[in-house]
Length: 250
Image: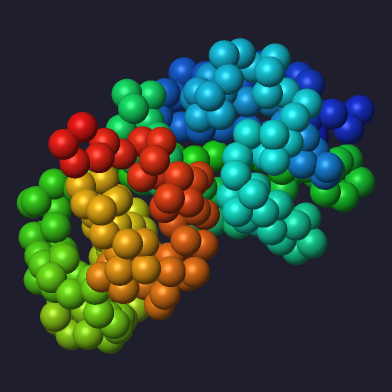
């Protein structure tokens, strides 16, 4: 099984300051380490900025529920329990996170168990990496221009992966590999990303009712929209509209 070894005394990163220093230099990478109770043991500055706190001291020893809305904290706890129960890493969980410049950016999060000397899991490390927008050349090279256009035009409707594979002229498994190479996400994650981005624009630039935003952007209903949006963005659609999005004529 894949895992990060702990120090001989059972503490995580006790003799690995170089590793922690590396994560501190990676400005587009958000890093944290947790114990089995969900307490943050180590974080980098990018993680501190994400919580809105000023220093690592304000974050170390706290839990996700001290910093994030209930929906997001619950999602993190579910992910953590999955890692602890299986002893296996959890790869590529899609999130929409506010960057240091204030802009929202898409990240992929991976969580890896940390093991004691006897092999038992004593915590985990989590790394979220910024997904940089691919170049048009890379999209064209992988024959994905038609796929991108199709999703942009039809995100409000049901989209099947088989349809996208046909457009790209490949099998579904080949499409998934191409999407991973170019966008860093699966085809399904790409569809969700387009829908959420469309929703953020409507929340920012219109007074459309949340239920209408949900159906317009391809979500099953307002409840489904709220749950997915909150888990990806760290706030409900209503909170996004009131706290972050400028209203018309402001």
